[in-house]
Structures are given as structure tokens and as C-alpha cells.
Image (tube, rainbow, N blue to C red; front, side):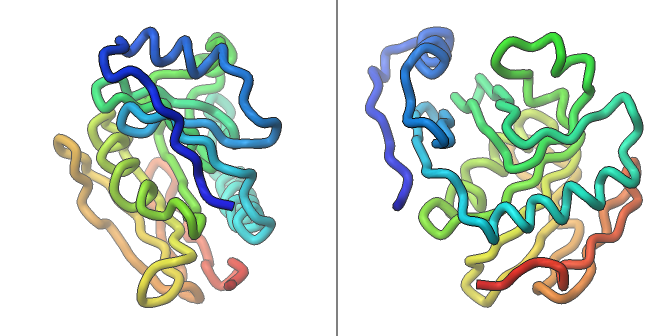
Length: 194
């Protein structure tokens, strides 16, 4: 099953779009995001997708301080890009997340991780990095199971405007290093391959 885009009125304000996103009854288990002003409903990810997210999360727990949390279903807002995004993993301050009702400002995130799904990999490769960079999120890890040359992991950092610099890129099977404040090497050989 692929993602479904839900039409909206282009004249809607950001606040009206967020209210629609918060109040609408969405299919249970689906992932509902606003990507470039379009409400996108995606099915729950496949198990291999979840295993990759779990492997990264397990490694992050060994280095993340107590004041930061690792969240799997946390929505982060990028109003300037008309985005309400739900990365596969977000590392953000626990206190800010505990006080939030439905989402946090994306700028609070220290790291976001996306694992591509076949049906919407383009969002993870193009739309979302532009939004994450615009918000100033220091690090973005893209685990691309469906990359044209085979599965890869790419770490982006040093955001300027809506663009990141590639800090590292590896094929599945090779390690990728996250810099400070994480100072962590993730072995992509642990990731299942489709």
C-alpha cells in the first residue's frame, strides 16, 4: 500500500492546517504527516523498516544523556516549509516533549532518523531533508533501503538554508559514524536487507 495525499484548501493558514491534522479521524495505525502543505497518510511501516529503527535506537541509548529522549512517533513542526513531520526517530529534550500536546518545534531536535519505505522514499530523500535543514536540526540520518545503487546510510549535517552537507555515506554492511554529541558508530551490517 502506498501513501495517500489528502487535499486541502491552499488558502488555509498554517494554524488551520495543523488543526485539521490534529482533529481529523485518521485510519488507526497510519502515519499522518503534512509534507510541503499536503496531508499525507501512510500505512504502518513494514517489519524490516521497524527492525532498522530499533537497531539505531538501541545504539543511541548507549550515548544519549538523560535530558534527551529517543522518540518514535513524535511530530515535529516546520511551519516555514508547511511541514508536520514524523521521523522514524527523533532525539529531542525530554522536558520539551513532556510539555508538548501534539508536536514540538523541529528546531528542538538534535537528530532525526528516517528509514525509507518504497512508496514514499522521495519524501525522505528530498522534501524532508529540506525541511529538517531549514529548521536547523544539526544531524539527519537517512537509512535508504531503496537507494538506486543498493541500500545505503547517509549522515547529513551542517545545515545552511534548506541544504545539508553530506558528512558520511556508506553501503549496508559498512559502519557509519555519528559525531558529537553522540560520538557513535552504527554498524549497518545489523540492518536487514530486502
